[in-house]
Length: 179
Length: 363
Image (cartoon, rainbow over all chains, first blue to last red; front, side):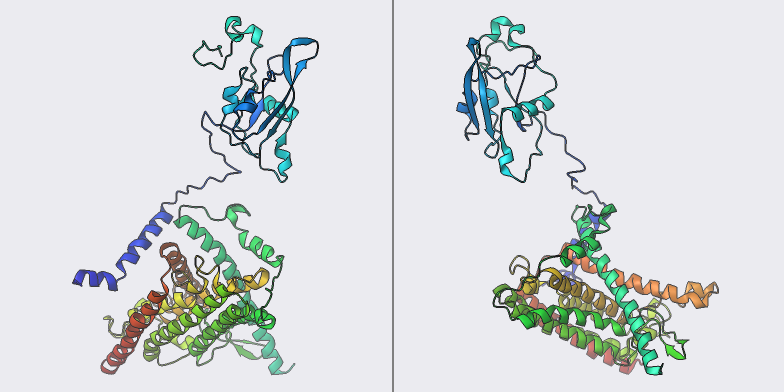
């Protein structure tokens, strides 16, 4: 043991260095705490939050009841009951639409799969509830979420580019709809 | 009213005042510990209850008061109930001999009373040591009576640790006792009056500045042993959170748990008071006399004295928190080796050296 290490031992040199570190952290007090309910972090642009059903500008539902979201969902969140629009045999809509959000893993595959962009991911995330049955959402609740989160709605499909709109718009290599 | 009953009433009033001060200090300590620990770890500490979390101790107290009181099946019920009370009482009555302020006497109802020390007995420091050792019984009883392996291990560790480090505390103060020639805490503190170079940590003689009688090694041994004796990090083996869930009070809940926590903080406060009285001159200012005396307010000098005492005690309490924020827990064999093979020889050598220097250079 050299004299230097001996001196360091008897003066508690290493403990003092550690105590200096903690003291400097206290003097240069910069907490990294985010006081969550009082201050919230800014979300990234592509944040994937709560799912919602969307409407067109005039208030009609976008969903055409094609079941593609149900097929795309990896955790079987979605259940769609499709039906004909009364009086219009060529058009279909979702008579019932359920989402079991307890299982959702927010991958966004249903949003990608939707051919008419009827599904959207909002920026809501404060969805903790006391009763998990409250997370079993029906169509009205999902539409309500979409109504409060997406204030700017799309025009009806007929008023957009007519030559594009009647193709399956989920194919990304086709010309995209404006806006 | 006879003199005895009058004396009793005055003493009870004094005890009540002192208990109030101790309990308030304990409450603030629980707050400041969490706060300072947070600051040192780049956190904020309690912020929700009241402005900057100032009402957190009250919220904690109310919460613990209304919690369910659980006694585990197979526990020794009488011992289980006795243990936290014993720990708490022992932690509280140690303050009886601590002089918070100057040794002035005042006459009230025909009695001479000392307002800043409840009982000025001539074996004050021995009383503190004896009482502090009884505190280990509460911990061991609590650990044994819980009928839980974690509690039992915590209690056993506590017994071994308190015995090892109690010894060092006792030996570390012998140097101070040699220098002051008394066991009364009031007289020990009075012997250090007249500037910081008269404090026993410096050990200087009134006629010279060279610190021939310095007790700095005893002071270091005392502080380290005090940390170990109060079961604080880095010597918190009896309640090692990561090994034994909470050690001896694993099975305790509600107010019994609060008793243990209060006793821990009260013990911290007690050893801080003793360290301040023995080594840092107690109520004495680090300069001769007091400022209030110089500007002609002799009757208010006790305020300055009490402020100095409080400042020194809080310095120690801050050191406890600071150590907690910095150091990891020792391993059990390291703890024992450090206590018996490092601290004990230093304390013994300190006694010998102090005795020799006192023989050749009497004060």
